[in-house]
Length: 163
Image 1 (cartoon, rainbow, N blue to C red):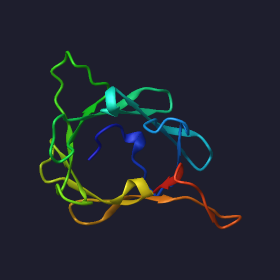
Image 2: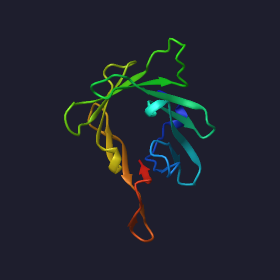
Image 3: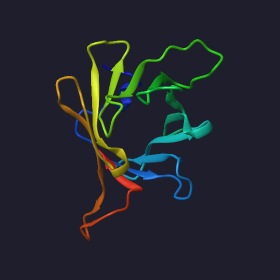
Image 4: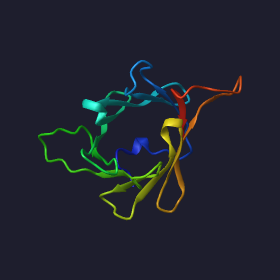
């Protein structure tokens, strides 16, 4: 199932290097680069208290907008195709929420177009250590801290890889 565009579906395992775009502001975005150093995606935060995340392609075209539902007990977010405008009756295409109110828990992502397609995010993004599983428990994506192969040194949390 393709949600955004076919060009973002990779036939083989692909590793992207993700870097924080600003080291000075805590809520700022990220940029993802392929193995050739070409920009693939960019994520930026907008709105008060970073209640909106925007995923853009290398040209700055908005692919997805994620909005935090407020108030929400389960830290719920809703995802919209393209740019989300308040004055439009645009329907969310997916929802993400914490599985539990207490302690560190996984995140459940439900696609509204296909009710059988549910993804689970386990781990801690803050530590750059998490995996995304589909409903069959197959790993679909993974985030890990990046290691410099020439020196075998783990880089800071501002640089990580996405597989």
